[in-house]
Amino acid sequence: MAAMKPRTGDGPMEAIRETRLIIVRVPLEGGGRLVVSVNDDEARELRDALSSVVGE
Image (cartoon, rainbow, N blue to C red; front, side, top):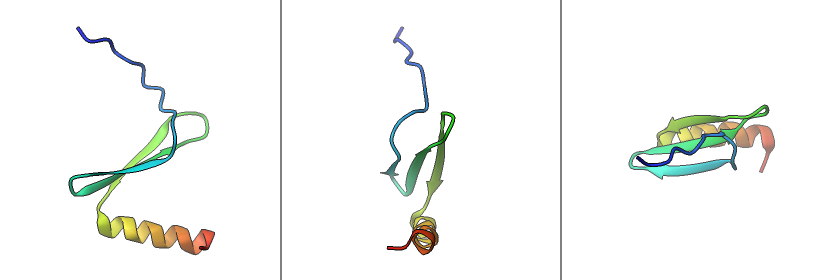
């Protein structure tokens, strides 16, 4: 049997493409990560919403 690795949830913020979706993983304060899958249109909408708050 393969060894099981503990899932700590820690790690960097990342976004990866899997077929038609983009998987975004965001570390949270207190541990764990928020994992969201979005399509291209939703990713553009998220980018626009964040850039309007943060600025470019």
